[in-house]
Length: 224
Image 1 (cartoon, rainbow, N blue to C red):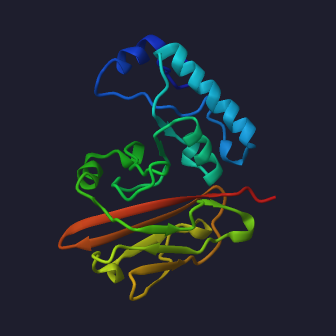
Image 2 (cartoon, rainbow, N blue to C red):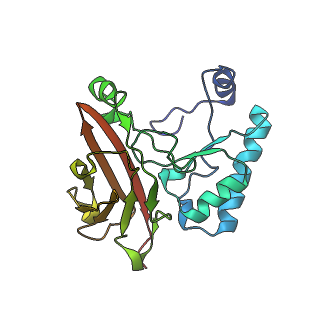
Image 3 (cartoon, helix red, strand yellow):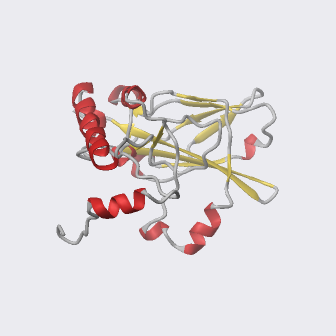
């Protein structure tokens, strides 16, 4: 026991691991803020976590969860090169075939977000699919903050002009400026710069009483 937290031991973890309905995913070794570190430091950290998995459980997991949900294109490549098949951020949304396997969303279900009413609601959400999302790199540098976002939807996706988006630039949730052209491409202009460390974008569309949803998270570079 450390402070107010109780930690599982390896016998308890192995007991869970042997259950066919449980997957023990990799979450790095140190859980440090790795996205701003050099590739060498990131690789050494992940390599150590894999060694522990192989020692304690016999093999590494195919799932990875970025520390704090924060990643860059370079971090994603490192995770791919280590042989992971899926990686999760910390942005909310519904997984479907159009989502990047190394930027998978997940709805939080804990603390203030863990009430049964919320759980009952989010299990009914449908994915809001899109063909392409720009920028590809979700790591926002000081010189491109706020980023310019462009989302290309499929031709058969109707009612895109009725989409509703919220974002937290300037550490203040509100509606960014949205425009949709005749090719089903939506451009988003944020009101202010995102503040360190996370920028969030959540968009939803109500179609015949059913909610479609996607979210994205931007990792914001530490100001120098």
